[in-house]
Image (cartoon, rainbow, N blue to C red):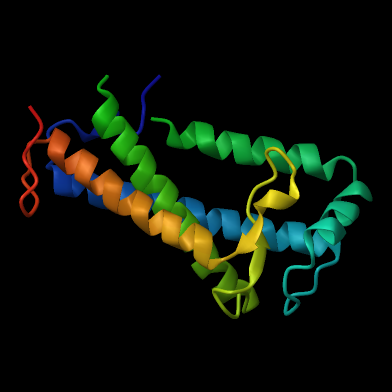
Length: 170
């Protein structure tokens, strides 16, 4: 099975990073579209903010097929990202996960006008379902920015590219 980096043979590290960013942005947009559909199924209006975690879980309980369906979608997304050498693959994973998550929120804002603020709370993940995943949007966006930066460093260093004082990998 080919991973995320297998079709990049011969491409520069920067070209690889750009391809990963485009791929991840498409994944993030697709996830935003899926969440628009899930919100409609759960009766969360287009302009409505995210209800409290316990209310969201109650709405999921009214459609018992939806929670396992959404959990398998989340797991499948992680499998798609897990793309050998550990450093470039892990770097690619971090870049894709971070760009995907940021694009997800950009997509939700473009499609729903939500979140109206980075302080809005969101249900971040459903694996495992827990109220701990109910956090302000700024938190996953900040983590995603760190993931993209770290992933770029790992990917570029594995290709021997020096980035502002960072030694190239041996």
